[in-house]
Image 1 (spheres, rainbow, N blue to C red):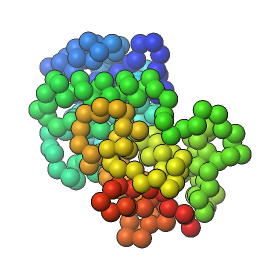
Image 2: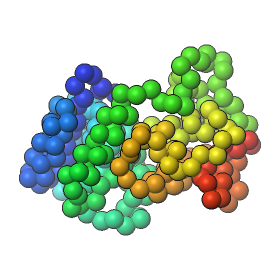
Image 3: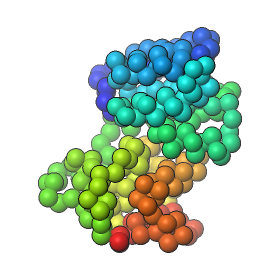
Image 4: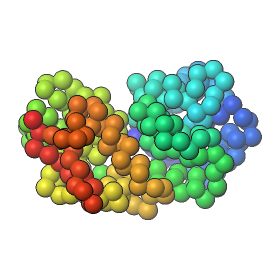
Length: 240
């Protein structure tokens, strides 16, 4: 993660001062140095200046909304973005994930839920991804038809063009390509990509896989790359 040091850094973005203070206090208890922003423009500027490891981002901001903030932040940051939303509708989740969010919490949320998500971020920041081999030469990049994934460079190309994947999308594809004959369950993918004991529902995997397929131009009815294994989960296909 971009700003990860001995003391992880967080940015809390919410126009309600009481919410900012509550979330900030919880993060400080978990060992974060915390910065705050009350609107979207200030949030983007703060993210550029501080390069946080975690951004807790309210979707309903007074100037530009959290979705647009997330899109802008994703142009320069790989921070873990946890969105706070007052709605639990499917559309809100999909829009947030398409903008580059990693996770979401629905208001009102419990302290235990938020702390659980934050601890998952800390575990993820401190561990080596399971799917990535410890030593691998760039010449050994994995190829599946017109798709190439370079684990060391964290680069994916499709038909020679570089794909703009989020960290979660890359880690999912990295997991699939590292063991292409393995059918991974959603629970296994949550453990490998989000970290052990992740706090949340496994439907998150489906949304991120859907976004990944869209960027791969993969027809979900007959995918070439990320294949659905009925009753199990997903595995890597042969490509095209």
